[in-house]
Structures are given as structure tokens and as C-alpha cells.
Length: 305
Ligand code: GLN
Image 1: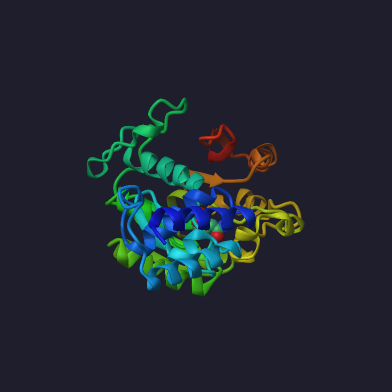
Image 2: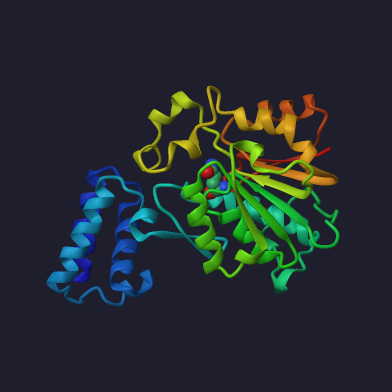
């Protein structure tokens, strides 16, 4: 079988299994298997696959057909350009969350981004200004860190920051720590296990609290795509009866961990903006912005005391 035939056959199979973007998924798996960039497949359409390669591809495609996420099969994903290993113990980092990380490092580095020559240009013409700069070596809390993706991106893009990353899952933190080591930022991230803010010692204060907490309503989890429902850990999805438990709690309790001029930035799900904004306003926060994602859906709340 040639590369092209393998792609066509596998695409058809994944399509029948109702996998989204079956051709792209096939190409990514085959490129992974053949250890070549996906675009290089196009130059190799006529190349014959050896038996070991077709066997291995069949195995990968079979797993994807059972709706195992591509990132689990490959074992990692890219987040803000950093390689993040994933497994069934952590949420697979989502592209939307890259925007939260980006808003975080823009704030930490000042509106024009001074870190390592990186210019966060993608958000440059967004309306809100994140000009107030956290002075000195900023301290950041990544609450519910999961794979560690946000903490790692912030540590990498803001070389003066020191970060505390918490999670209820000790197993998730093991993976997050390994990810931090691989990205070369482990010495500036302290990983703490605990339920909610109980992971933190009283008296700790941060310039920035970021979080993408679990926000799916418990009853909705059963209705999600199999890739999410069956492979992301329930702990990382379940936000309680209405999905908003973590925001309710943070609106009440996060202030004591925030410096007087600090900010909180929280990702949330579709349709949750108004409810979350109200929790924060009821607790006397100033909501500075509700940021939309690249599909024009309200996605991130930015607030201060
Ligand atoms: N902070 C991690 C992420 O954004 C994990 C989030 C979670 O487990 N809910 O991917």
C-alpha cells in the first residue's frame, strides 16, 4: 500500500467512526508514525509502506476510531509552542487556553511584551489595555494546573516570574512537573497539591492568578464528545451542578491571595460569562474585561479588587 492509499483508506474508516476532520487526523497520525512533518507526506504519496508500517498505522487508526484523542495516541500536544505530555490523568490543553496564557504573560511583561524578544502581537489590537505592569519579579498562581501548560508557558515567556501551580490530583502534578523539567522552567514553578485554595499557605499573595478550572455542569458531561467524556479526567471537567462551583468559590476566596493591585484571569465555558461576572461583582471585584476567543465567544474574565 502506498502512503496515499493508506491515507485514503484510513480517512474513510475514521469518517465512518464519526471522527472530526478524518483526513487531517489520519495525516497527523501517519506523519507521527513516519517521523516526518505532515506536509512531507505530500511529497511521498507514492512511497510504499512496509508491512511493519501498515500494521502500526492500522493500530493507531483503530485507537483513533475508538475516539481516543489524537494527543493521547501521540502522547503530547503543543501549547504556546511548548511540548506538553498528556495522559488520562490530565485535561488535554485546548487552543482557547493559549489565549489565557498569552493575556497572562502580556500583563506580566507589560502591554508591549518585553520577554525574550517575544512580541505578543496576536492580541495587540484587542480593545482592553493590560498596561499596568506587575513590578519586580511577579508571583503567579496557576490554579488547577493539570498538565502544567499555563504555568509552563508563563514561566517561559516571563523569565522573572515565579509561579505556584496547584491541583487536587497528585498524579497530574507529577506529569506537570515532568513537563516543566522538559521545558526548562521547573526551578521557577512550585507544584502544590490540594483541594482548591487549601493547597496554599495563608499569607501567600500573587500579582496574577490564572485558572482554567473545571467548568462543565455535572449532568452535561455524559453528552460531550467521547474524546472528552471518556478520556479527559472527570475531575478536570466537573464544575458541579451548574458548572460554576470554582468561580463561585474564587469570587469569594481568591482576594486574600491577591496583592492589592493584582489581577485574576479566568477561562470559562460557553454561555457562562454573565453568571460569572455577577459572582465577581457581587463580591465587589472590578471586572475589567470579558475577553472573547478567536471564535468570538466570551471566554476569559479579567478582574481586580
Ligand atoms: N489548567 C489546565 C489546562 O488549562 C487544566 C485545566 C483543568 O484541569 N480543568 O489545560
